[in-house]
Length: 373
Image 1: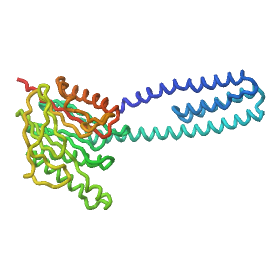
Image 2: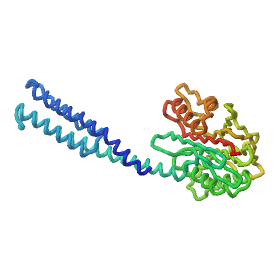
Image 3: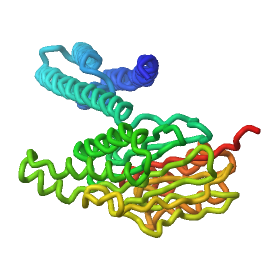
Image 4: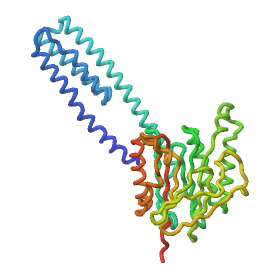
């Protein structure tokens, strides 16, 4: 990431240098026409457009230079037509100098804002790499692809989460969605991901793992040290999650769904939801015991693809208010593997919503590869 930034920075400057031809051409045209115009016609006030246009895309130094060039052009016009001490041209020069100084200060303010926004995006990207680590493309007999789409254009991460952990018997995967947005949602997501990564390989039973995650989330939401106002808001917080255990040596997957949208299973072009007979409540609503959880087993054979997603995908609406039909769009598009499937769904989802999501969206596609003979 870091080595690529200077190159991108240089590429972004090239169009800006090309745009400088616009204010310079404007100064030349206004100057020539003003000199050739009849005595009663004065086009000098139009010169302020040159530094004003420059301030929209260039920094304060470039804007000041264009402003100085406009003042020089006005002085040339005054000298050719009458004189510099002519009252009309004197006021035009003073006005042009003041307006150039004003738009130069505007350019400086805009440049500071762009710098701050760039820094915030860098921090968000760094946070994403730390909290929401990219999933490996291969884990044991599984091939995995993931995608995260942030609803806010300046943000890279929100309350949606996913992670994978390798155990002695197989692979465990979690996907979740934190209720709410902002820094609190990011903090809750980081809490659950940290608990999952720390306990996934220690808890032999999937029910015990989910019970541990519930205890971690509940203890944080019920923190007595939190301010009273914040504690009331936190009392309504919870995390929906689906936790999956995929053994290496069995054509199965074990699933516990805590209030999360059911994953989809794609088998030979047919799509079916993995509905739980005994789903668990979302994490953070109650500290349930291990006996209250039931891990259900589903067939997961070679070539099958399991698609996990957050509600930001299925609740995405188009202009007519129609929800995104995920199951329909998945059918017939999984033959080329999880990477191609998610690439297709990403393009199709953004086309469905017109390029702007109302909520963060995350998807994870898992394919069981045939074992070598």
